[in-house]
Image 1 (cartoon, rainbow, N blue to C red):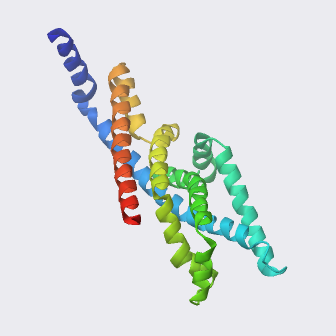
Image 2: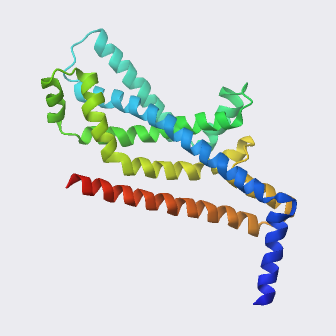
Image 3: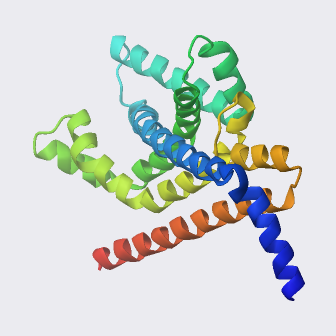
Length: 242
């Protein structure tokens, strides 16, 4: 037992303490959390806008009169559908490479590129989450908004969207967790995230077990922590509905 502990300690010191290699892990963790947080914010903005376009078109297309307004909404809905199809139909790592080497090729800010790409990717999935929340709201809520003098946009902004986001908040939190794990591919564009940090240590020490297991454990702890927060959020929402 003592010999095994001594070997573990020696390996730990060699992989993390010598050369302050632990900084690759801590700095990478900060990058991972930064990319995830800001990407979710961008995805949320995109998701709300695109979900409003998609749900508005689905709910009013039979009532719209032929003309410029209907043509405009039809074109917006078509663009939204293309966006959702392309983003959800291609791997995120391919989108990341295209974003870095093609779209944002002139940018030297790798973190910003990752945030934009993952934000656009997350927006497609958040769109369907929020759209489902909007479609679950009773049609009477729309009529109630109209009865107090709101137009369609005001009804969506002040009545429908707040209720929809509350209903899908746990799903949005789960999207945050999924996105955090997806950012593990940031190393493909040379970004020093958590996974890349562990891989750099592996390359320096030629010891794969300790750094990669450490990275896996950190991801696991983060997922457990955020899952616990989500469960508390769900209980709070259920208690508020009583």
